[in-house]
Length: 382
Image (cartoon, rainbow, N blue to C red; front, side, top):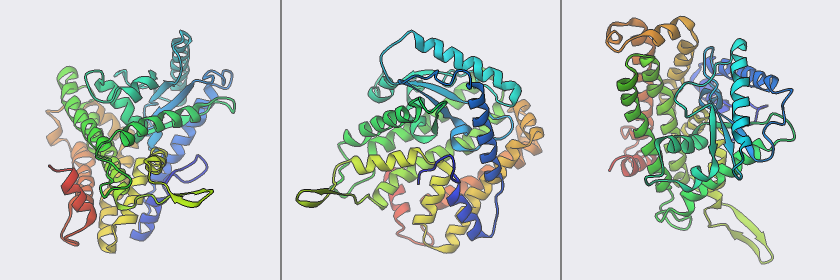
């Protein structure tokens, strides 16, 4: 399910649109905007394209990594360090910050002020601090986003940005699969519970932090934060659930050729390889591939597709409308219930999107013993 820059990152969404007799044009428009923004970044570093060296990766996150950029989207980035401590790291991060700021005049918006993006992070913390008091909210966010919505960008043919990113993501996945006492490639239970629980922890942390930000920041960009929680943040959790369930629904069947013939690989490695493919795929398209693969009943599949991807297409259209975006940026929590822009573009569209996810993961009306609903009952509930 992976994608490259030259391929359509939403091939499964377009296949579902065709099946439904729809077009959902905003996905292709957002891909075009994302690629234009990538070109701007490369242009900004054309005179300093070797800035990353051999131990750092420039990782794009957020709507950039999801291929969902519209006019006004932030350029969320992280300088991922996979090597020994060097005072030059700060210098590199500051140079990247200044370069991205110069891109503001070219329709490239710098990251927000939370501090999670627009800074550097170290692979050691992401890999070795999973759980426990040392695993801060910031570390949890960075680690899960490396899997759920991150994309390395190479500034020159000489840098190792993509190699470093994949190596770090692989190490994170090894922690989740190899140290999960409940997971066994040889056993019947193949849902990676360690990863699944951390995904759930991340989703709940986002929800709690949303309330905390409202307490700390009041109505500043409240409606946009609310909308992102309803759409893109919920999407990340849903795509992560889909990956964990896919490990059970279609376990990899890899074999290795040895001197003694073919032997089935029953180690966690094939699942980790699937995780790398997942991390390389935009969450929307992974979810679309999941729907295509595991929702066999045609009418139900079309209904789910229209609700999830048709609804999300309308959300991208609204988010790219500067009148709507400005209204949401300025809207207070108190005024939201009577605001037609919020009700039409956030509340109603997000209800449609959420109802599609509920139909995908929990519905038993069409097929009482559907494997997705069975797994949801076992892992998402108690």
